[in-house]
Length: 327
Ligand code: SF4
Ligand code: MG
Image (tube, rainbow, N blue to C red):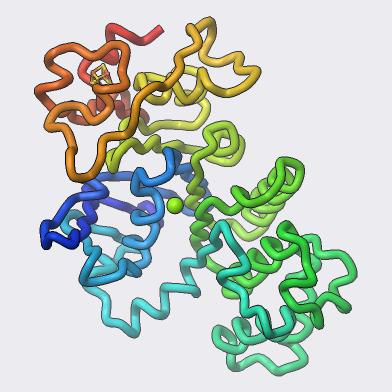
């Protein structure tokens, strides 16, 4: 059984004109215990909304789940009581965001903030045990001189160190699933790599599953067992990371890969540049949402939305022509 399964999930937003518009359209994926799923796509394609829907944290009534379901550990989260939901959020599922500053309290020492999380989740532990655990967590996430750092305020730390603190706080509740929403986007490349290595290490140690959300396909391929590529609210391609990366099926995935610097994948593909814009939510095409940017587009693409086809039990692709255009 999957730890998390997202089945035909749709999320709609009500505009100022009162019209409901779908920003996430019938997406499906699953994450097994200890595995990492990478959700990749341009900003605004619905990745963060998907994360919020999983946590049932959509800003209602403007945004709401308009279809499908999210099942965590066998429970449909829409059917849970607020109490049961709180027991999952921040305990069984933890989240880290792009900007740790927005999640940390700027006027409280980081040691205090970690202790608060520990007190909330493990009220039965003694203060001494909680302090020891806070120190252990800071050490685990690679914060140098952790004893002194307990007394530091967030602004006294670098961006990379703040993200490590956020990871420590997320781990404090010993989650089964960590949702990492663009966790390294605000950091420079060297620090990015360190944080990714850290997440992988901690994941191997704790056996937690991870939903890694990013716009960076190269990054996601380093951390993920499976990748879902999202475009304009839909998953256009899904499969094992190494297959999606070495043999992309969807023209959008192919363009993303070809745009990577120094790419030796996919083999010998022409450099495809992605021109044009993602269609706006007010003007979603009835056919393939990628058609206005796709060099393979034909009439059928503009008229009929492609449905996800299963290539083998592992991979799906939503493109009318994928069989004929696969390099
Ligand atoms: Fe391109 Fe057509 Fe495939 Fe859409 S369905 S990605 S337009 S080939
Ligand atoms: Mg986002």
